[in-house]
Image (cartoon, rainbow, N blue to C red; front, side, top):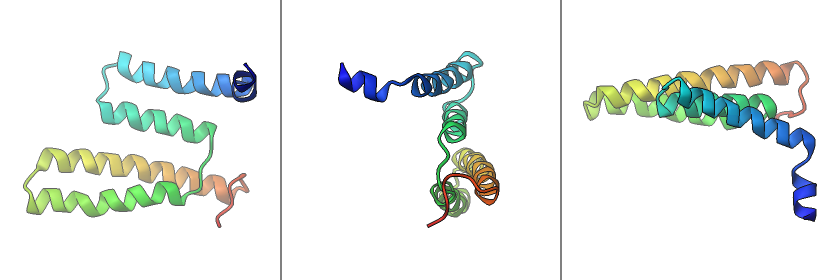
Length: 109
């Protein structure tokens, strides 16, 4: 019972509710799994800001892997999905960069 009281505060419950609503909305609207996951990550990052490096690393990895799937493996559909995911992470990285420049909680190490 102490565990529940310690970790399920009113604020954390509301934050979890936002994430669940975001996932439910994406599923209800029939979005692709990638889009639902990106939207949930986006909402989670708004609720719990993370350092920009945690968003820039997947962006760079996806930008490097996309041409490999497109040119070497001839997998255009997968390459397109990777490019869209890279764009999502790029947008979130820019958003967190602006937040950090504005003097947000998470400073760069």
